Image 1 (tube, rainbow, N blue to C red):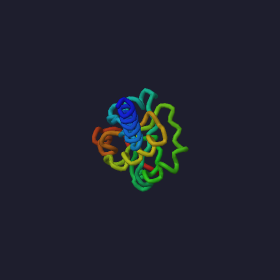
Image 2: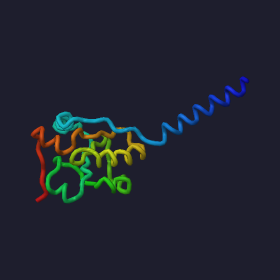
Image 3: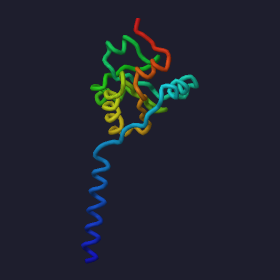
Image 4: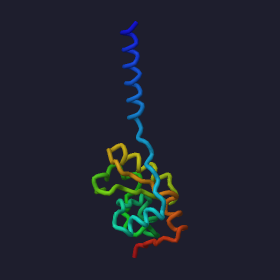
Length: 131
């Protein structure tokens, strides 16, 4: 009976570990005001705009790097982020998909810009446009 209990507990822990490691958790949110304040202080994470190049050219967070969400996994080596990474799209869904790739690759400090560029603009924060 004791042996059965040990085998059962071992199987239970193993299945929990597989389930836990199978899908990375969502990245925590960062508000537009919080990200802006970090950028002003020089302590901000790298900001990645995961929209299309055309959307990026029409307006983006100043200094943001453009890597479309469906290319993040292939271009992950381009993201040097000693202070973490903050991702955004227009409102959120594409950024969540890109975050999954970074979290699965082992990036520890990944943030989701709450409300995306729409919230950034609604807060009256600066937007940069391509020339």
